Length: 258
Image (cartoon, rainbow, N blue to C red; front, side, top):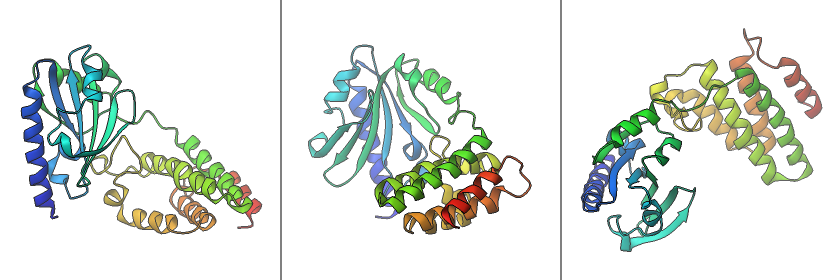
């Protein structure tokens, strides 16, 4: 499916969704998120992300009964992800990620790109207040660097012990997350190209070369991945920054024979 066709399908689905919720007196608003709010980003792999805002007391019924979704009879899988949110998979593979809030509950949400598609009053202001708080909390770059280096050592130790699955989790997920948060604050990529709620998202768009190098590292077995990530981090951050844990990185290299 082309991006144009995918966008048209999503636009029709959103129009049907808005019509459905507008018929329900206990629904106060519909907020579209991510690429569903910025339709220029839509491609065939885009999910539909949304918040449904209901009157107090009605939230749980909309989390447990999904007849308000267009084509609800074609839903193949539903999983409760959080107290407020669900993942929904249709039988053709389309994915909807949704959360249902009252206006008061909306205060716990985190939002970046959004579009208010339906509002009986108060929803736009409530979402704007949430979005105004920003995404990631303040990042301590020195801590991120130290966490990254220490988790690489732990991960490679797991791999050498034969715990390949745990090793991969430490290196490819935990350690890499700290590396990417460090990159966000030290390299200062264009924030318009990133997702401030998830450091793993859109790295390739903001820095294609970094994306390629991290991708090659992730394709390797755990120890090779860890060594490539450490090489990359030292190249990016060690020169000219006294926050880089040079002694710790050297200790990791000695311990691992690198």
